[in-house]
Amino acid sequence: MQFDPALAAQQAFSRAETNNELGTDWNEAVEAEATFSSNAGSTARAAYEQLLALAARYPQAHCYQAFCIFITWQQVTEETIAHHFQTGVTLCEAYLVSRESKDPQDIADVTELYGSFRDGLGLNEEDEIQVEFQRDEPKGGD
Image 1 (cartoon, rainbow, N blue to C red):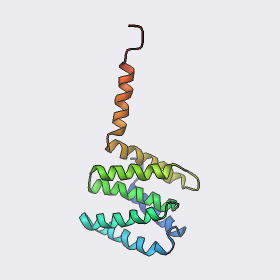
Image 2 (cartoon, helix red, strand yellow; image 1 turned 180 degrees about the vertical axis):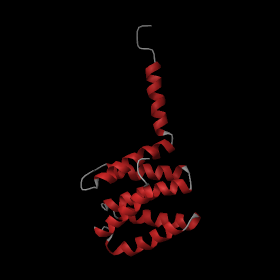
Image 3 (cartoon, rainbow, N blue to C red; image 1 turned 90 degrees about the vertical axis):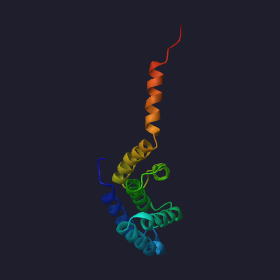
Image 4 (tube, one colour; image 1 turned 45 degrees about the vertical axis):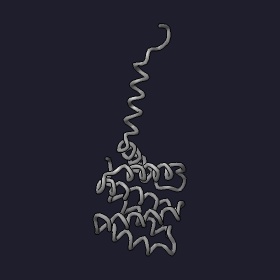
């Protein structure tokens, strides 16, 4: 990975505050982020889910959406299960649909993470197998 997702998460979270992306829900996000960052296990997972629930309520909060993608990678490293990889893929796809008014570095980092989330689910591997199969497949005229 060409960047540090934890550092990128901190930067995106800070920009979300500066842009007032969550309005009156900002304090809830700050509390949940503090819990997520300072705990592990079920406590961190509950805070993570709370942060994602806020993201669902603010789909146009681009910095906050990037933050959630970055912390999803942190969650993957804490608890490596398919659910977190799939959550990452879903969040990345929603984020990358439109690139307008988004930070170019966040776009680059999210694009990189998207590949990593897909790798974790074996999706990019499947694509490589298909390419190899197509290369080995007989081409006409038997």
